[in-house]
Length: 161
Image (cartoon, rainbow, N blue to C red; front, side):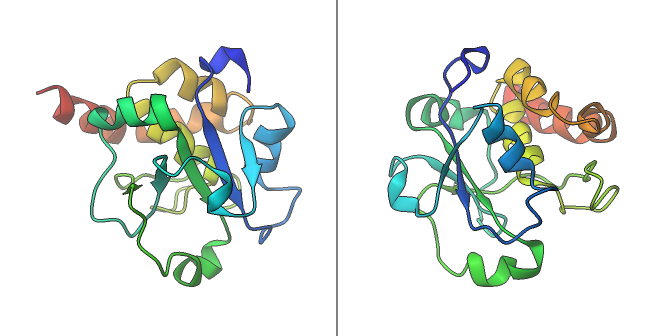
């Protein structure tokens, strides 16, 4: 992993369902920012799994778990999301509603890329600099922060109060 990201354990369950040229996780992997795997068993069992169907929203209190065991994003096609998430994850967490800034789904609610999901989770759990470094690898990275500034800051403020 890249030391710029404080040796955070960032993982991606890569299901190879998207165009590799547009895949954000493959790009992050190219920069050695995320570790890829094909099975959940390849990752720490107590890691947080980003799950859009979880009942629990990721929050600042998840910071310790993320620091100790890491976080896993499931990198799959939005077209196959229901099939992929047909199980419950012990440490499943969902993100608040966010707008996509990536070039494929720009401006669509909750259609964020895997890189956007990881960055948002890092931001919410207090790893703001690391989150911004992740998305700095994409031309649209700054746009994600701009269009979601109010939503992300609201989530962080909820946790502080």
